[in-house]
Length: 88
Image (tube, rainbow, N blue to C red):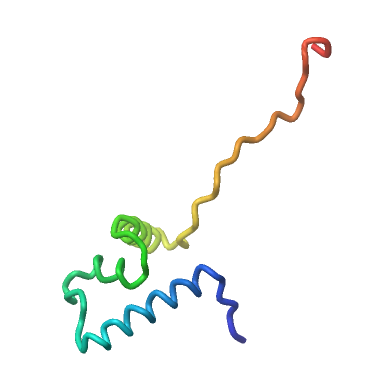
């Protein structure tokens, strides 16, 4: 059974493909192999800071044997009962 690839993952795949094609045209690596974080950032199109944060989350998740979760969006929740001065 195949997995559904969401749009964000599809965009990431295209970024990786374009980077690999650029390296093929260059006939060598564009960013040295010892600069792993910079290389991953260039390949995926994500900032180095984000790569660092995700790496730290991965280490924490591995040590606690939990999954990496996407942070939820915080939204203001309306009060259940909106009483005005007359109702009070």
